[in-house]
Length: 210
Image 1: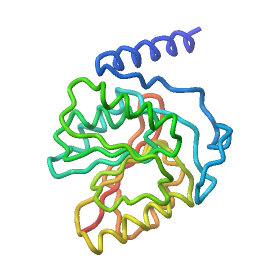
Image 2 (image 1 turned 120 degrees about the vertical axis):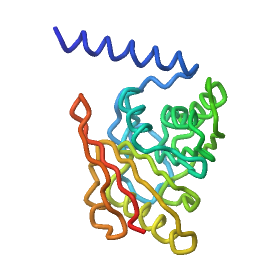
Image 3 (image 1 turned 30 degrees about the vertical axis):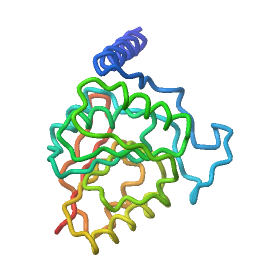
């Protein structure tokens, strides 16, 4: 009996926060991977995970912890409907960029960005495979278990290479970190935070050692 009540309260809370921001990001049914959408998408690695979204309470805690600055460019890798983009766009970030391979979700994220109430920074959407995306101008990278080990390695390799040409402080935020071992093996990154949400989900944050 308690679980249905909590789920109903959670749904109402998410809806209330969407209303405050003037957006619509309520989750679709969880899908195991990109093939569940019935699409033949050009991806380098078949390790995508179905659409999920971070709850608002945890998302705002993350925003407080990461302390976005004016020179930060925030990437949400696998941005879905754009909830994370919209919350971070209420900071003074230089820019917020969402990368999403599913065109339907990317279009919803674009509309949410246009409707967002209280936006302080510009939002840019890119509909493509994150393993092939140019991430070289980012300083903050957000991930909510959007893909598996192979894509994670491709993302980390690209960020690492970009630091050679453009040295900068970068931070990674990883919720439900199923492929964290790929990050932990990178000597250029160090863990700066590790905690569990009230619901038991793990959240880890990394920063480059430079």
